Amino acid sequence: MTSTSPGLRSPRAMAWHRRSVAFAEFCRQFVGHRAGMIGLIFLAIVAVIAIGAPVIAPERMLDVTKLVDVQRFAPPSWEHPLGTDHQGRELWVRMVWGARVSLLVGLAATAMSMLIGTLVGISAGHFTGFTGALMMRVIDFFLVLPSLILAIVLSSVLSRGVWTIIIAIGLTSWAGTARVVRAQTLSVESRDYIERSRALGAGHWHIIVKHLLPGVLPLVMANTTLTVGSAIIAESTLAFLGLGDTTLQSWGSILKNAMDVSAATSGYWWYVLAPGVAIVLVVLAFTLMGRAIENITNPNLRSR
Image 1 (cartoon, rainbow, N blue to C red):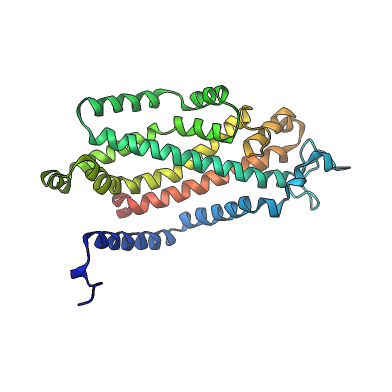
Image 2 (cartoon, rainbow, N blue to C red):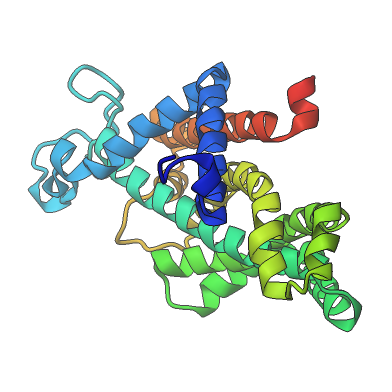
């Protein structure tokens, strides 16, 4: 019998094998989900464009001092695919560079929010007594507190910049995730193998890492893709309110510039339409992916 046979596999190797098989099955089901694949392909295209911005649209194209005899507020045409802004800059160039900031803020803020929400949610569901009650009160406090207003306050107090917006969004949007993770943790805690682990002497760290975290991870993954869209909208809102970094391009800052020159009421519709449609499509793509992951990981939805 070889060392790779099931009889000689270590428990850790068997666990990794089960996880790899489960991941392969998840990928197979996701590929068969048409809406989820549409969202994934669209986001992959946007990500490639954002990463390749310095090659696709060199930064010198944003330098207004080098734009000579360029028509301001030029409508979309073959020469100007998305039109120009109030300074004569090509709108498609600003959109390409804006994708970098919008995606960075959306992904980084969501990662921070998911990390905090998962840790607090698991702790609130696992620990009982005073510790669990205290964490629940903290979660309830952040749930009733308007996250956008708190993000505005943090962005106003801290120095302006991309990372300020990321911190502001990440620190104010984790409560919903924590509440969902806590409910899932309580469900996992009621299963028999958790009781067996406690009977065999397993500590809190072992139960959380080995049992609770894998049990709530599929739910966190589905919630992550849905939260990215909300984070992108929050970033656009903060930039629209003038709380973003004015030296960087983002879809929210483009909308703010359009508002400053009254583009919507002056007939410059392309100035508002391009960033607005981009935000809607990216948020929709993340939502499609999130729904697909939720359908795959949730047995009740999958059975329907």
